[in-house]
Length: 455
Ligand SMILES: *[C@@H]1O[C@H](CO)[C@@H](O)[C@H](O)[C@H]1NC(C)=O
Ligand SMILES: *[C@@H]1O[C@H](CO)[C@@H](O)[C@H](O)[C@H]1NC(C)=O
Ligand SMILES: *[C@@H]1O[C@H](CO)[C@@H](O)[C@H](O)[C@H]1NC(C)=O
Ligand SMILES: *[C@@H]1O[C@H](CO)[C@@H](O)[C@H](O)[C@H]1NC(C)=O
Image (cartoon, rainbow, N blue to C red):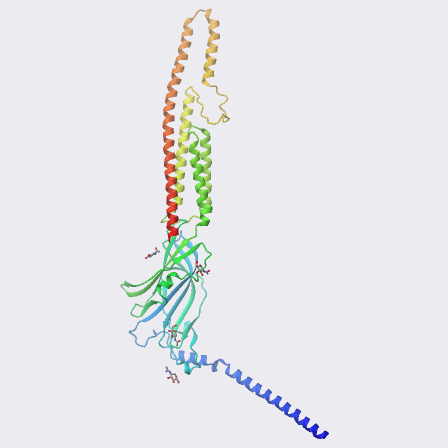
């Protein structure tokens, strides 16, 4: 019994060992098989690509009937606005560009190739349309996309992200409330519309309002991308053309804070200087300080305000006009002071100062009235001495001198009053023009802003 059990045990272990061995052999065999089928040469994809490209000539436009045009379906998604360069009239954008076309030589029966429905092929191996953007001026480093997708009915999808540096007519007069309209025109370089035609991949309404891919946190906001299809007629033939207009709008907040508000304050300070009397010397000092302030401000903002040869921003024009007013009123004040100073030297002294303490250097000069008083005093003491000598003639000449003096002073006073009145009138005129310009500035800015926000 013992032996029998032993034998049975032995045969049990034997069968288990054999089973383990067999499974090992099977696993290795299947492993070898698996290695064998994973070789690229044996994959269905390889067979398919080999079959597709064996007789393919990428030089041939992929249509069976040569007189039939091949239609390229285009699509454009604006990804980001990278730079708007008004000085060089260039726009740099990053766009998702999609081309889809049917290649009649690249189709297969899915049931013969392991139900493969879609396949990627190297772009360099197949025919591809020669579509360019007309406004291209600069090649930017864009990621390279070497593959295209082909499905079993021969539809080829070529998607890529490109950086476009394009020429654009940038208008800056409304800065910082400006809206730019730049176009990207796609057409074939060589093929006329009889060979290569263009069409939209999506509906034009969808393209116009699609902002899903747009990066929102830049200075520019995408408003819309309207598009048109047209045929360009030229001596070389008719070319199909698709134009996308990229309409973008600047976000002005940063410029309002750093440019408009300081500029308005400067103008108000300048306006305040008209409240100082025009014959006041402190006014010259004040106006000169404002002028220096303007200059410093203009130097500071020169980097922020876009410059272009064709159009100047309106705020730049307003600054120049304000400076003209400032310089006019400054030179008027200088003229006035000079005129009054000449008057002083011709024998009189007038108080030119509007501030009491501001008598620098003038304290040594005597008031004409005290001079006059001094003269009469000395003459009276003279009289005392000379009455005895009895020369009444001298007294008479003294009195005449006083009389002449007073008359000349009166005349000069009248002259001065005339001049002053004239200059006051001029000052008032300047003040009013300044107010009108400031009003115009405000109205223009407000209307630009409402135009900006209306779009
Ligand atoms: C695809 O191949 C299968 C089997 O080889 C055949 O039955 C079918 O008709 C083919 N289909 C087309 C569209 O040729
Ligand atoms: C291939 O793609 C095109 C466009 O997306 C589609 O119309 C067509 O039905 C697809 N063919 C197959 C076999 O899926
Ligand atoms: C943009 O410009 C094109 C012509 O270049 C014009 O047809 C289109 O109306 C303009 N769009 C806007 C919103 O100004
Ligand atoms: C940008 O904003 C629009 C709506 O204002 C939104 O539909 C879109 O998804 C945003 N894009 C990104 C990248 O956040």
